[in-house]
Amino acid sequence: MPVVREFRLPDLGEGLTGAEVVRWMVEVGEVIAVDQPVVEVETAKAVVEVPCPYGGVVTARYGAEGEEIAVGAPLVTVAVASAGGGAADTAASSPASSASSAEVERPLVGYGVAESRGARRRRVGAAAAPASAPAPVAAPVAPAEPVEPVAPAAPVVVPVISPLVRRLAREQGVDLTALTGSGPDGLIMRADVERAVAGKVAAPAPAAPVAVAQDGVVPLRGLRKAVAEKLSRSHREIPAATCWVDADATELMSLRRQLNATPGPKVSVLALLARICTVALARFPELNSSVTEDGSGIVRHSAVHLGFAAQGERGLVVPVVRDAQARSTEQLGEELGRLTESARSGSLTPAELTGGTFTLNNYGVFGVDGSTPILNHPEAAMLGVGRIVAKPWVHGGELAVREVTQLSFTFDHRVCDGGTAGGFLRFVADCVEQPGMLLRQL
Image (cartoon, rainbow, N blue to C red; front, side, top):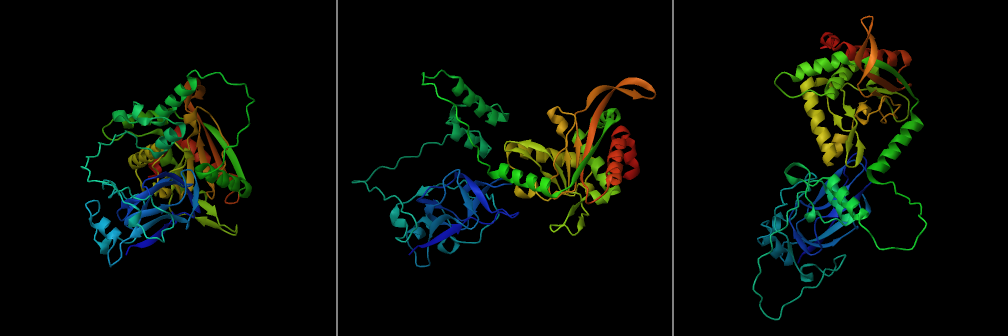
């Protein structure tokens, strides 16, 4: 007889207490393989697929799309074949799943495993599930006479990578198969869905009685909730201060053009700034630190895990470049580029969004000059870089048009005083104005 196994939402790491159901990937009554992804969930860190460690027949699933499920709460139940055989044994030995009854269950592997995605899905009737199943399965419909098998229709392939784009389309009632993607190879992007939604809104609608608009309340959940909690805690606990200085970035931009004129990967401004940050932190190591939970000590970090602000589909996120101090400028550029693309596609993992020790905030990409940001708790410092713009500047004793930027530096006043913070910022500004100084530090 089959045995019903309950699969609960596992701990997804980083102390997360729950996750929101984005999309169910299986139906009740469907035969699944071991480690097949069954649901896509959104945590405060990322969107991930959750694989089930049991193979058999799905007898129940818990939580509707958009509903939050606590870690440890039931996710799905599966009728697993026992040693004596049964309906699930038959399913496990069918062409849809080649696992033997001894192989139907094995330990859960890493999240996001996609080895079983290509497996053909089958559904079975209620006879496959035991009477004790937590939720009923639809009864099978038995035909009065044999029916010729019909070949399944070829699935419509919709060129969408991001689950968030699918979710937006689903919520707004947009048919993805009717859209032409503006991305590479016709990939459907979020902007394509938003244009379709705008077109629906702009279409004439039948006259309706005039009604007074009501104020709406948007719930804080997922990433937005996590950001709100983290920034509130930072503002509440950290005595932060900010200093700033204007810097002539003309020579830095000239160096970048020289580097990109030679064969090899292109070097971004952000990569050069990241290199300057790692050198500056080696000179002022007290700023690569954090205060302990109880406030009784300061943790000095030996490695620089450099966070940087990136705009993604889920809003502004802070991916982390691990061991930035050990990477060359080209390697920094490659990793920054990879993480930026992952942020745009919404595919960053929780591990890529946590563990930073210092943040580089290039808010100049939004066309602004300055900012006084809230620190990324529990980090002790953040360097902000405004837009680089042509301005009149005194250079060599004469007035000239130079490429100028404003640098701001926010720091936890518990880890250092203003002299240390000012020394760090001045060193960064000097490296921006005279990038050749970096040669002394490398």
